Amino acid sequence: MVVSRKIEALPGPGVQVDCPCVVDLVDAHRQSGRPRFAEIRAAYENSQGKILEEYYAPHFPAAVLLVAAKEKAEVNGGAERIVLKMRLYYDARKSTTDVDDVFRLARRVERKYSVLLRGETQDILVRGIYTTAAVLLSVLDAMVCSERKRKRERVRAAAASARKEIRQIEQNARDAALDRALIRYLGGLAAGFVLAIVVVITLKAEIGPQLTTCLVAGAIGAILSVMTRTTNRQRVRVGLGQGRFVIFLSGSFRLIIGAIFGAATFVLVSVGLLPIAVPPAAEKMNLFFAGLAFLAGFSERWAQDAIVRTLPGAADRNAVEPARGKDG
Image 1 (cartoon, one colour):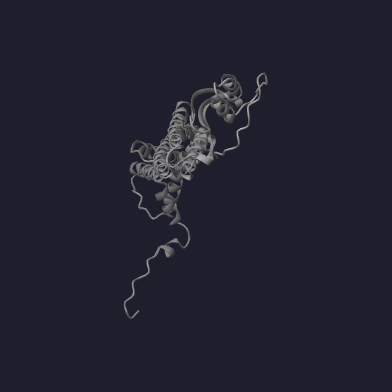
Image 2 (cartoon, helix red, strand yellow):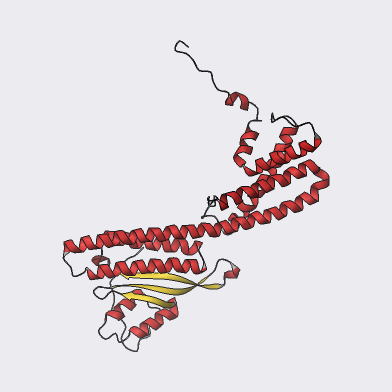
């Protein structure tokens, strides 16, 4: 959240500033001749990170910075990485509620997707938010000395435009985060396929050739289902709030679930719990069960509905009550 506070006087000459903040930079920039601005800026970069871009409002205390900050990564043993961050300060007394809302939205989007995104994608996100914030600050600065009515209308229009821009940036960031999550999901799917093949080869002698075929066909159906949705530009349901490892496991589980559904369908049809006619010929029977297992792996919903129908009392619950006449 963006807040304002009273700007204290800078320390006198010769006093070392160890960890200045954006307010100190603003104050130093507004001083006549800026005698200590370079020193304060260097101290800020030493403690907070290199300033890549910066904007200081000429007519009221405000600034927005684009900083390349160092932070420890959650993976790779906590190694340091460079992350772009926006640093913002402005005097809220010179602002409006519309501008405050836009800046809060900008900070929320930046913080959320700085966790979900990495590398160049995250850089583009923060640079876009920085540019939007700098433009909005410049409009607010230009309107400081304007008439109240004209200022309110102009700032409201600028805030609406900035809000729309940040919403678009947020949507682009969400799409990028979903793409990253999908890559992890597909990686888990591939790992699950390798694991399934190893298990099938290991247990082939114990479970028999038909059940083995159904396990493999169900797994292939699950893979093709994900591939079809991906190539048709349909979103695979992946939760962005889940961790990387959970998303990876979800991909593995999708394949395992497909294989199990394929095997379960074979068992239920073989024992007569699913009322599906089985072809008498042996060669057709193998293809029949392979196709049935493939369908079960391809469509989880169809497999679940088919299994639910085998439960006791399912036929009674699914029965349609006959329509009654006016006298009934």
